[in-house]
Figure 1 (cartoon, rainbow, N blue to C red):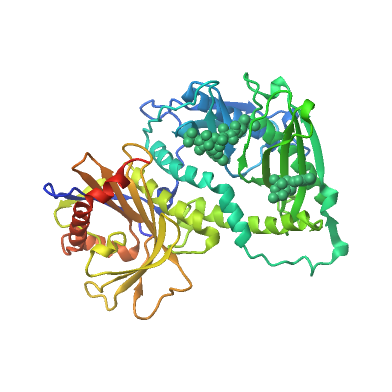
Figure 2: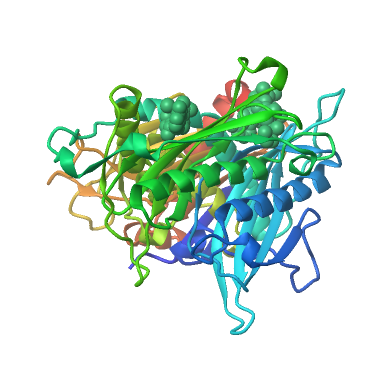
Length: 569
Ligand code: COA
Ligand code: ADP
């Protein structure tokens, strides 16, 4: 079974020279994602940005299946999140984006929807808001998690650029979300380029030729176009259209397109990132267009795009948003039904058909890696360009989650501490060999590390390690080097070495003034690593000590070159 022990080693350089080993007994699952519900804790603490909304689902909120329409839910989510963002910003805010949402449950008429939102982190003018949606059955008192969402809001003042005050995370869950929010923001800002690259490189088998055309529904039959006039109830007091309203209109046309393919009442399962590219105001006309891009065995992708124009300039249309939604058709047994094949239009239709297949693959990879459910993840994940961005994200965020844990217990304190699996400072150790296999990008690289045979091991050990480094975003944040094992077809296990694996380990460098840098090494122990950790902690080995001494020397020798890295971005 996966090992349950994590250790943090902190070393302050000479003259103090003190090394402390902390351990944290935690399961891999709980180290991966905090499920705390953010309610007031036993001390009565409640996040100052937290906003709650509860709504009774009435027939006017439901679709033909008697379930809450996702469009209505998106409006409530957006409104709750916006109020939380505005509580922090102290001025009006607009929705910049809403990350992918997976809907785990539908909500029936008569149930209550409880929505809770709080600001995870404020950056310059933008904030990440975390939202949880829970449904409640009033008769049985049962509750279900419907979905989690992450939205970015931008504070907006008429005449000046806003610089938001920082958020002050207090609980372990808040510290985790605060720290990982920086990594999510990084991923969000390159999202469009990442998807474009992935689509360009994703090889999808083209099955169009081999299909029986007589049994296919022409995609053209599912095309929808609809216009909406933005009125005051659709906008905030400054006249900016609510993001939630636009998402609801998008869901409406997407549902019509999906229904035209299956001739039934489809259920929306997932929504891909909404990015609000530009504002729209009261008086704008919004044109919404949707079509089924591809139908798979049990699910279909519907694409929607939104353009805005003023009545006086109808030809000047602004692209406001595009999104992709995944629908299924549930049978009486609640299982997804088979869907008819679709025949795309030549040209753009065929391109979108292929891109939808590629997006499906990307979505599944991403869901698996980004959800950070490490208990379900193998120790080494195959590395390939289609999961590169997500694996780096997972690497850094797993380490940050470990760092944010606040129940570390001091297990020993000595001057003899170092770590044998340590890849980040491996070049410092004369005993280890490190080969750069691939420089993935400026901040991520893959290394092949060979560690000598230790204490009775018949063979040396080798690792294939993804190392991701991140500069601090704010004062008080550490410089991070995160490490995790990956598998590469070019570097398979060989009889010469024993293949070692690390699921989550790495370093944090805390700048504590000009003269002092605190180095913490974390290792979410796997069975292979635990032995070394325990021999070092008990003083039977001096591997930790040797490596941390080397690390200290490296920092001292390179202090001038390294100083800028430890400053905030
Ligand atoms: N996802 C999340 N945040 C984003 C983003 C995206 N896709 N694109 C930009 N941002 C953030 C930036 O990181 C920046 O945050 P920071 O100040 O904390 O560093 C902030 O938005 C402003 O970025 P900037 O580059 O100055 O502006 P921009 O020209 O990219 O504009 C918006 C960003 C969101 C202000 C602009 O696209 C907009 O007005 N969109 C419409 C918003 C709206 O009206 N929504 C309601 C429904 S239409
Ligand atoms: P792309 O064409 O690259 O997918 P767009 O932003 O142009 O990106 O469109 C997003 C989605 O909106 C498309 O995939 C398609 O499903 C839908 N769409 C775009 N244009 C139309 C249209 N004229 N009619 C119906 N649906 C459309």
